[in-house]
Amino acid sequence: MAVANAAPAGNSDSPWQPSHNVWLIAVSVMLATFMEVLDTSVATVSLPHIAGSLSATTDESTWVLTSYLISNAIVLPSSGWLSNRLGRKRYQLYSVCLFTLASMWCGAASSLGMLILARVVQGAAGGGLQPVSQAVLLESFPVAKRGQAMAVYGMGILVSPLLGPLMGGWITDNYTWRWIFYINVPVGILALIMIATFVEDPPYIGKGRGEAIDYTGLGFLAIALTCFQVVLDKGQEADWFGALWVRWFLAIATVSIVAFVVWELHTRSPLVNLRVLKNRNLATGTFLIGLLGIIIYGTTTLLPLFLQTLIGYTAYNSGLAVAPRGIGAILSMIIAGKLIGRYDERMLIAVGVVIRGASLFMLGNLNLSMSMGSVVWPNIVNGFANGFLFVPLTTLTMKTLPQELIGAGTGLYNLLRNMGASFGISMVTTLLTRSQQAHQMFLGARLNPANPVYWNAMQRLSHYFAAQSGPAAGMREAMGTIYRSLLQQATLASYIDDFRFLGWLSLTCLPFLLFFRKPRLDAGRRGAQT
Image (cartoon, rainbow, N blue to C red; front, side, top):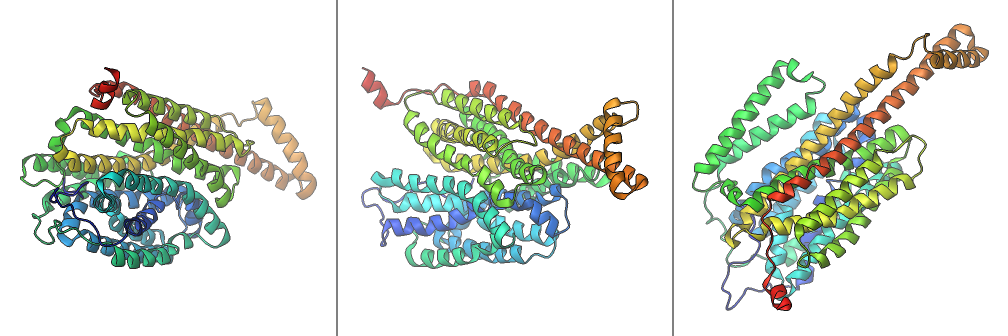
């Protein structure tokens, strides 16, 4: 897979060094990366406002998230080829420029379709920023300080999910949801100036001399992912296989993904090097990161919707309740970093999976009269699982991979994470709608005069409203009040079902840990024990 190399391949006797201060370079590239990662979370708390403003349903508003992620995933495999072809500096400049223009387009969108199209462009522009920024940091810092470079990168990736919901909620409540996209404009301009000033390409980046990109593989991948995502996003309202177009789109997606696999296995320069999946650790880790993408992004989408549509939180308060997840993640990253190498990574991942499942079952006990603390603590626990999942999982997945295949392995790993995230958002919103319909039918069957609870409630409410607006109007208002309560309870039950489903799905990761090869102790530790 053509991705940005993780380390320079220059002359080891006289390694290349940038002419500018490495910390200025770090700030330059991380400013752009932070902006891109922030946009994956900043919109989550604004979805109800976007839906209301653009006359869309709540589940339709989630297309704002999935369209970004799927276009991001399509471009990701080609980011290495583009950075080598154009040069990393020029590729970053083009990406940030397009990302900034697309952000302006998002803010100015007058319809949901226009916003989704703008988000597709925005996701495509941001697809290569993370891997290319990581490569620039590794190349710019001396070998002895690359740990510091990755610490800067890791903190940028961790802090953005913490600030995203808070920033998105505050901007939405005090201004409008459009400013969560407009705010990218000054940040993007500053990033462009800093990248143009401080970032430079190493001499070994072959501008224009790279091998041709696998356009056939990219086409098959784009068609497969796009068709599959359209089915996931719109299948619910079309009654799934009852619609002819759904069957056609699934058929096209299936044929395209099969053609993609066959082509990638036989072409000389594949877009995605599927042969690396022969490595058992990589195959297992790639599958698990896709599964975790479903769980993590499904949760981050559901919770703000629950808090705003059912509990009545403002966008800022829902962001305030969700943001502590980042605090838990930072704490666990510090702890997990110290435990890796001392304990079996599989055990650390198992701990993370159990913690994640426990937090989701905690969220599955939410009710309509809960306090904010009932949301904050499960979120801290949920975030605390991240350090025990991402750090050891990435380490164990890449541990047995040869050095020359690490670039291909990390590219495939990130591709599956994005695909899992997009699928997870669509899946939980579909399950939410289906479950709500089922609970509504179940509860509605009990609204009949033969049920004494219903009859007594109806009598009390009818007398109350009749005193204000007359017997006939009082009866209608009483029925409306009971029906609204029924819808509220059905919606609450559907959210509980979703959170518990994600909790069980998290625990299903445990058996797959057995497929990892048992990690061997590193030489330093063996020496310490002898």
